[in-house]
Length: 282
Image 1 (cartoon, one colour):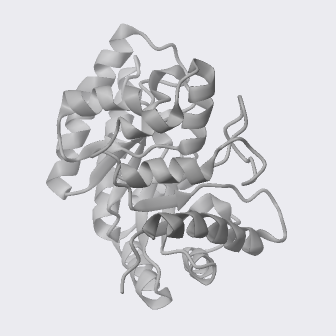
Image 2 (tube, rainbow, N blue to C red):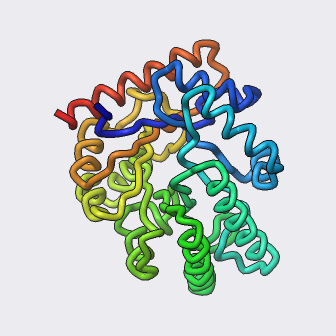
């Protein structure tokens, strides 16, 4: 009998020097169902978008042989090359990244691309950058629809899109089955603290449009590299809210920071989040 959910592992939870095959094997050994690939703003990760066809097929072969697929993509490269940029060359590069990411997802069997919810990052947000972001977003969704790949906004750490409610404004404007929300519960928890709002209500407002959820720990004002159980995210409650909203695909997002016991970290995170998800299945 199939499980009622799938739980994936964020690629950066493992040492960067490992091969894809080694990462897939480590994730499988820790009990995960799939791997989330990272396409961040570094040149190393952006080069993956130009991965030769033979290399793509080798990765697909590795998935089959290891018995663990890559099924989601964290596309944070738009932080460096945002869709709303005032620089035409950056905008052009942004859309090229989007097109190549969708093609890579199509070739590898990736179902969901998590989009960074920024109109711009390294420049000031203005009415013009927001308008440009919306116009280019509409084009990106058309590309995704053609390939049958889902796009989902990550709720970020900046004012522009740090809640599900804000992401849903664009989801409703574009009004496509191929644009949804892929929230980060750590970022949502920080936003709820900032605004004095209810994180569970915020998750609920995306019901029917939540493609997946990042399970990440945070503390007030900090958004990265906080070990599970040492922050302020109430994982039992946010998972329950996401489950009620229809989410069945989850990813543990945490980072390898040099810990020699990183394999145990993978297993511990899988055990912690898996046990919480199992409660919701009962």
